[in-house]
Amino acid sequence: MGITYTKKKGTSTHYRYYLCTHAAKVGYDACPVRTVPAGEIEASVIALLRRSLMTPEVAARTYREARGLAPDAADEQDIILHLRQFNDLWDELFPAEQARIVTLLIDQVTVCRDQVNIALRADGLYALLDEWRGPKEEVTNDAAC
Image (cartoon, rainbow, N blue to C red):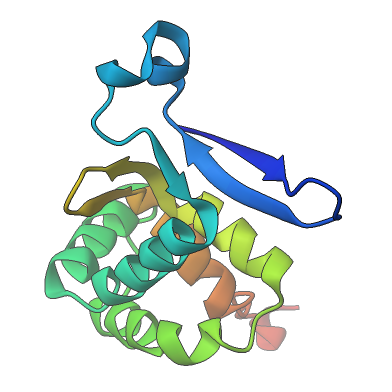
């Protein structure tokens, strides 16, 4: 689906929605979900993302990805803690930062008639958690100098 909009005649009001690009090319009978109001689907995706990040499966997948990227950089309990704090943090973020995080975390959104599915980027989850944890402290040994 691609984002598009329409403008209410005689006003400056815009209505954003997602349009099935396949349906737009071959005919609207080719797609069971032709258009979806942008605000509604975006709110659903964010709600689903927030719930998904609280699941043990996502924490385990993120931990496995982190171990593959940097074996000594990830602590499973640290990952779980940060994922649980995501809901509180989300509400404090500016919209531009929320959009950046959505792009970092979501690989694909599939819209069906009766449900919305999201595919997460495990590497994106780990990258975000790494940002939240902040810079790593360097250990120095002054006695050796």
